[in-house]
Image 1: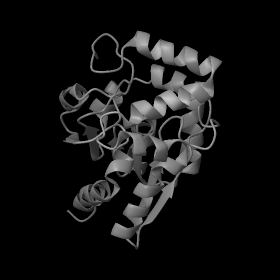
Image 2: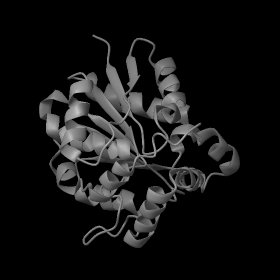
Image 3: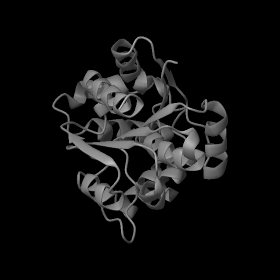
Amino acid sequence: MPETLVLLPGWGLGPAALEPLAQALRLSRPGAQVLIEPLPLGSDLEQVLAELDRAVAPGAWLLGWSLGGMLAVALAARRGAACPGLISIASNACFVAREGWPAAMAAETFDAFERLCANDPAATLKRFVLLCAQGSPAARALAKQLMPADARHADPGGLALLAALDNRAALAALAVPHLHLFASADALVPAQAAQALAQAAPQARVAQAPGSHALVLEAPTALASQAWAFIEEFIHG
């Protein structure tokens, strides 16, 4: 039976940002089913997870970018043995810093971003795209590629999820294979988060690559190769 890999996008940019990675994954494994599942809107974590649980077929591997990676971890914890494994890219255990997890965005920085989103979603999205591309040697071109046609995915509820999600316990308890890929020049997820996650979840596979938060657009072919190698390792040993 061919593998099914479901991709979960990050906040604000919608499924289009993951299309290059999805195409690279399909080219690398023509027999596999690679799907992008849009994130449900809203700030209620249980409702969002329930919607994803209904939309994603049991037995599918999960790959999530940024908020999508955090939701992939939470969904895998909810599904248990029905999820064979997951991969996260540029995704933190906690997006906003808190006691016991300083390797994250400062709370005051996030609060200012959240206020901007409430008042001007379009300006927030532009600022977010620039932060995603920051750290890339081709930041201007990358930001242009990332910028969506409209702000319909700039959901304030998704920002509330980012602020509230705390996956430390879920990561430590996950019994399925999980790989977490971090970008060394990420302006949204500090590089120190890689080491913090490795310490919090010793059973996890953690790696770092050169690039920005928009690693999915900078290196889709390399990410696809790494993702399938990880999945292959646990499917066929």
